[in-house]
Length: 244
Image 1: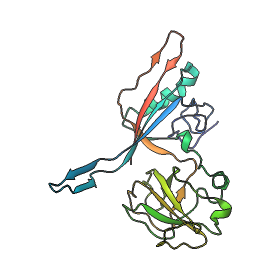
Image 2: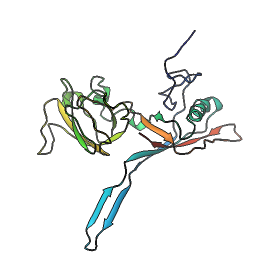
Image 3: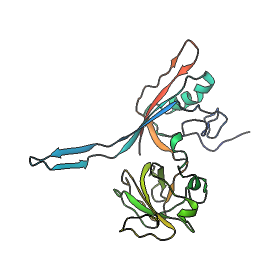
Image 4: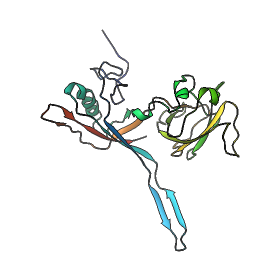
């Protein structure tokens, strides 16, 4: 008798498959996407005084929104996606989605380095609202092992807060070769800048994941529907938003 350990919680695609029982890493592939739209949403309160002074502040947290479209699909191609999404019951049950443009870091040396790409850690605690932090690795050398790059995304694995699933985007990376004059770095460290600011405190020794990053999302529509054309192909698209 065959058994499995976990049900799939990631939208099926060629990388993340699903089985006929709804099991993760099964035999059924979801199709790839024909297009992806990603937007950053953050409410900013803006006022201008009588003297012309401009005042702004963030009034809520940032979250990502994405629209995924598929090419016309046969029923066999469509079924893994349809049944997975129907099991999420609209916006009720969160799930994870992989976006192909963020599956691997842009720096090929860093991406290929299994020792560091998902294991650089925080030497010190970081706190909610911060937009930069130092990372290090045992015997890590940025010139040899590569670095993440502006435009890469990452998540944080914090043993003290397993609910911290927020996805952050890098906006800059400081190294010993190029760093702000107020920054100090050890030989095995880099400093990353990112957006949005940390949404939760992060403990020292927490690790970062830059490869195979997953967004935790829900459908922003409670109605799931598809269309079937005269060519017997299915048309389907998704509108999703990040949740914590």
